[in-house]
Image (cartoon, rainbow, N blue to C red; front, side, top):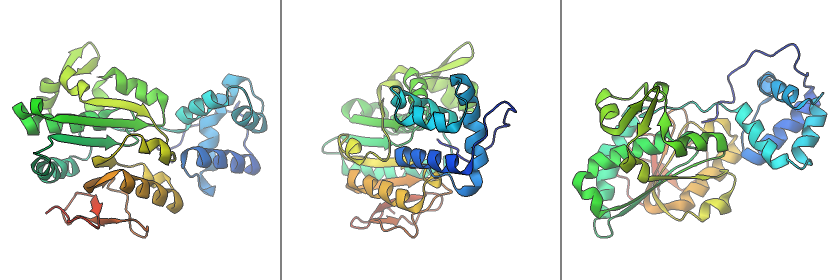
Length: 295
């Protein structure tokens, strides 16, 4: 998940970013990703991109803007820039009280309501390196048990970062990603090989990953409807306009009785969206107002 607020010590050799250059760069970032850098975060962008300019042997940010917008490698460089300015901070079973609400309240209701078709679809948006969708897969696996073979379970993980998705696709993680994971879960769903923990093949087969920018509403439509969407700790980096755009896109992609989980530091309050918060503590979960909230 992006962390656009933390700092990095800037090398004295790094180019200096003027206010005008900051304005141009943050507009490019916002237009492409929706991430908003406020006026007081110029130093964050400067510290994270300074070394990139040195790597490219580019003398100043005006040249970098040209390289990023009109050069033959502009699309590739946007990915490189995005990898530099974001920190994908995540782990398995992050915010476990919220995940308990998903597993014990939302999921049983869905299993009951979909018992005729035996198909469930989940979307982990801005999934970073894949810990969240794999966590959902483990929860679904232990909830369905031997019934899993009779169900069609589809879990989609999307992110804007190719680098993060490479880790997700590999299914291999260091102990840091499992720092909040119960030891019994580690033993059941991972195999350790040296310093790496590899996801169980059954869990790995339940999840697939795609590159997706959350500004790309048409791109999201091709994935169809979902029963549950997770998008946690990402919208705190968006302004109100972008948050409203993304949340309404999620509404379009959800089934009529579907649920949206957001981060504990996020809210839909003040946005014009078709969602109502379900009255369950620690859920941070919303459903379409046309549907009856899960109790």
